[in-house]
Length: 432
Image (cartoon, rainbow, N blue to C red; front, side, top):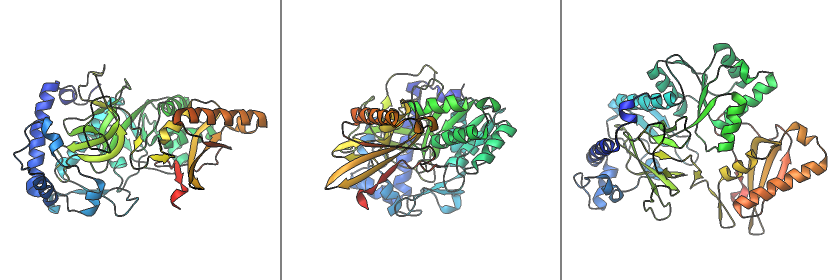
């Protein structure tokens, strides 16, 4: 099911021609309207007429999150503030937040790509969309909201928090589509079970879950416990918000809205482009953004462009689900470690709960990795020998995947703090 079949299934030759036309327009716009980009292009000996095809993309400079912060708040805007009708900002975990502006046309494009995403998840104008992403400066909630309204669906703008009330609303209002972070979806399932509400008591059919990396095993948990089709959605505030890419029911990668976003995969160390199938850092160039056009924005997200076509009929390229980030990747004794690798192990071992915490410490100049794992009530109250066996199995399987030694600590249910937004999976004490 498509929202905009003309563009989602556009022949590759036509799509490429459209991308090249829009890329040239974007480069000209930033050259004449954004001093930062004009200086960056001139430093490379480039003018607005030097970009002719997609093959010229590597000539262009990268943009980083530091560039947005250095030009805080409006230095990268390509339109006067009088044309900006909406401002959003990142969470600003370090330093100042990154500020994103939208013109009316930008908001229209955002609604369009989110309508495509929700339709891929099975949403129609008959749907009741339970939107548990946060509203406010965070882009998640309003992005879903715009897409749902574009479709003509009913939206429940419940936002985050008040979990038991959310479950009551889902049951009483007849919610059919759930949108939130995957970790919060699992928390909703957990609280439902405590309340004695089963998935059969709800009308959920599909869900779009994003804003944090999650594994295939986590998907299986969400689908089995909530009784819905769980699809991954990708976006980032700096580019537009959610809707940059989304899975279809084939679950063979996330389709990028390529008529609006041009993607590359680069080696994060050298900056060189990598071929399809190679994992590296995702780089995005906006093709239609007016207020904040971005050239080769380094997302720090690790993924790959998947080769081949999708059985669903969409022609836009697909990226694999996000494996982690280059800037929150853990380096333990010279080994790159992503939380999603550990998550994959834990979710295939019975007796564990879908909640874990990774703790990194430095003792006598040596990094040590400890993983706290919640186990089910039944397992925790079982005999010590069985707990020891489970702990050894988890440790052995994690070490097989990572190639380094780890400590495993089994903890009782509800020990690890729950999150209504992005789950905090890592505590790195080496910097304390």
